[in-house]
Length: 250
Ligand SMILES: Nc1ncnc2c1ncn2[C@@H]1O[C@H](COP(=O)(O)OP(=O)(O)OP(=O)(O)O)[C@@H](O)[C@H]1O
Ligand SMILES: [Mg+2]
Image: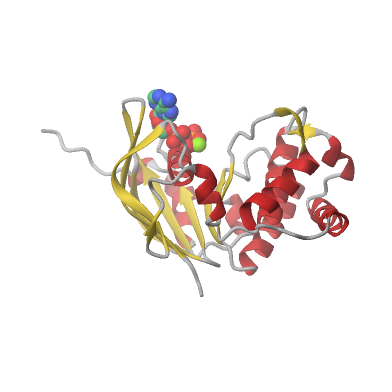
């Protein structure tokens, strides 16, 4: 059965700032939805609210997977239901080996029972796809990784987690052209194995390699325009300001 992630009239605040002001979005497994928007428009907030970051409070609306509301569930429960987040700024976790972390991710998210040797040989295949050396497995998660290595390590986590839905927050930022192609091809592979993807990005350059089914423009916590992949080209030409709704003056 194809699962659906549904976001309904979602409002959320962080501290006292209203960061999401009525988001509606429906993502099916295997679809790619690109979310574009200027700095501070609420893209990362949306990612955090979807995953249940404790600082973000949902004030209205709902998030559902196959009709079941997840809005009151803690992050680990959401992950077990198949939600994955690739961070805009991956945290360095000294003392947590990347290799052990990947195993925990697979076991906790989807009850992986693959024998260790088989598991790590799959992981090594995935590292190779992302052009990361095996030596990364024995390093602390993200510690001392370059910006681009952190982003590629997020995608190794995605390949390991095999979620139903992935929210990728600016996975393309900080990648050189070659890395962008490598990461894009891994994202395409994941999409091909029926993962629904919310691809948050500023620029359309990644969308040359990952074909979005839908593009949504987020401004001031609202989706102001949705369309097909051609909307990304329009944004590139006109900029975001042209899409900003006219403010009421009264
Ligand atoms: N803890 C906080 N307290 C107050 N305001 C916050 C807090 N966290 C985020 N914000 C504000 O919420 C707004 C949305 O931030 P968000 O990180 O979602 O933007 P973004 O679209 O991801 O931007 P960028 O493209 O720069 O990554 C910003 O104005 C930000 O300053
Ligand atoms: Mg952001």
